[in-house]
Amino acid sequence: MTPEQNLQRIMWTGTIWFIGAAGSVALALGLLLASGWRPAVLAGGIAVLWWVGAALTALSIGLMGWSGCPILEVSVPIADRNKTRTMQIGTLFYIVGGAAALFAVLLGPAH
Image (cartoon, rainbow, N blue to C red):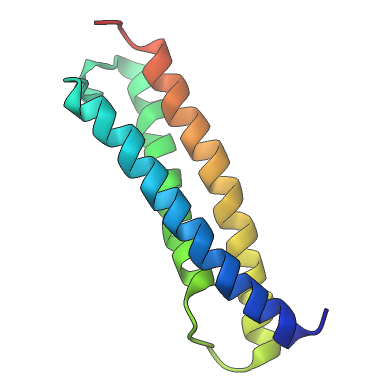
């Protein structure tokens, strides 16, 4: 695949990933907060795990958003490289951060 084709693919799929990631986080966190759950109920290390997971997830949404943005930094080859990396790292952070945050919620007290 040429850099131009790959870049177009990443910008299109990056937009879809961004919408999916932001929507799923909004849904999961919205339901948690609506049920009365708050991060303050978590103790010590579990709270740290939740905040690290939440931060990674927020960063991942930003990275996916950048990948889907149709703005090129300098040139097509550089944009191709950068958007490929941000999409890969964003996806990794989304999976790891989301799993860590939800694991911390499961380790927390039950209501």
